[in-house]
Amino acid sequence: MGFFHRLVTIVQARSHRAADRFEDPGEILDRSYLSQLDGLHQVRRSVAELATARKRIELQVHQLEARALKLHGQARAALGQGREEPAREALTRRAEVEDELGGLRAELGQAAGRESHLAGVARQLQDQVEAFRLREETLKASYAAAEAGRRAGEARAGFPARGVPGR
Image (cartoon, rainbow, N blue to C red; front, side, top):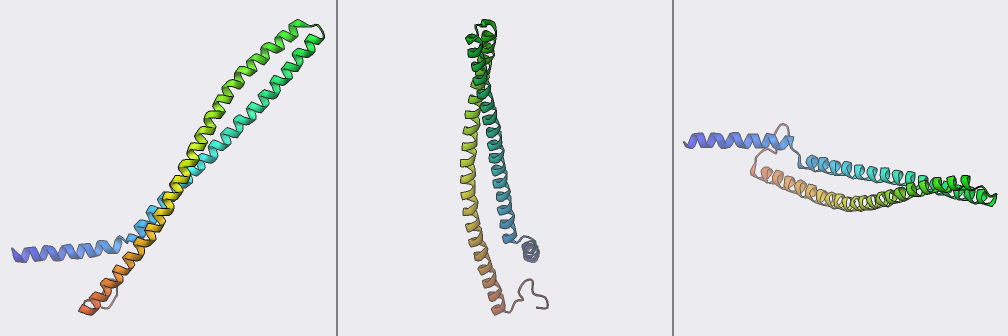
């Protein structure tokens, strides 16, 4: 049983060594960082899309406000000329425009709130990505130092360093 246990230990050590060659912690951290950056870019893109939608709504609000003013002016002019029916019609259309304006103003408030919230999320995510980047650099430096220490220890013990051909 001692021989079998020793054989399993040797195979495990070699498989771990082979896996270590394929799994560089620095690369794994870099991929994680890039993934976080991608998420941050998506959030920023969403903020920009919300800002664009809000601007479109603002433009519609301004257009409807101008139309409401125009209809009000038409109603006053018609009343000034003694024509009640066109004045009533203009006021009716103005009321419809005002109703539409109310809905758009509510939508504008919601869009602004969503944009503000998402911008806050983007700021928090930016902070988290920056903090991760600092931790990543620290971990990579620690790993490089540990790897150098391991190689130095192997060199002192007379074992060949991993990844160095001909040793």
